[in-house]
Image (cartoon, rainbow, N blue to C red; front, side):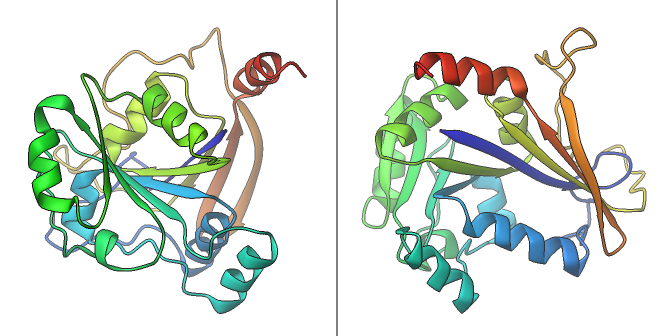
Length: 231
C-alpha cells in the first residue's frame, strides 16, 4: 500500500494559528490540486482533533472526479479513517454523516467502549493496545486499500513520519509567517528516520498560485516494499 502524506504549512512550519477561525494556507490552485490527489486515493485519514475543529466532510464533490473514480473501478467516495485516544467522537460530525464511503475509527483498547457507544452505528471501530501507523496501514491493506492519503493534524503526521511509513510527502508552503510559538506545528519533537545520513529525495517543486509545493519521495520505502512483494 502506498501512503501519501499531505500538509499545508506557513513558512515557519505552522498548520494553523491560534485564532478561532481556520487559517487559510493553500491557494485556490493548490486546494484544487489537493482535491484531485484525494480523488486518486482509496482512503483518507485525519485525526480526531481535526474532525472536532474543522468538521471536514472529506467527500469528493466534483462530478467529473466522481465519474472518473467509477470508470477506474473505485468506490465513488473515499473510505474515511480517523484515530482517537479518548474515543469521544460526535456521530453528527460531517466525517461520519456525509458520504457513502466506509468509515473506520482506530482507538486504544481502553477507549473501545466509549467509541462504540458514540459511533458504532455509523463507523467500524478497531481497537488495539497501541495504535500505530503500522497497525493502521496493515489493517487497511488487508481491506484492499491501495493508496492512503494522510492529512493530519500534527500528531498524526508525526506518527507516520516517525515510524517511517510515508512513501510520498506533499508539502505546500504558504508565503507568510505565523510567528506564534503556541501555533500547532506540522511536526512534533521526536526521533525521525529522515536524518542527515538518510535524506529524503525532493522529486519536484511547483508553484500553484502563490503557494510553493514540494514533492518528496521516500525511495527506501519503495525498495523495501518491492522486496517484500518479491518484485
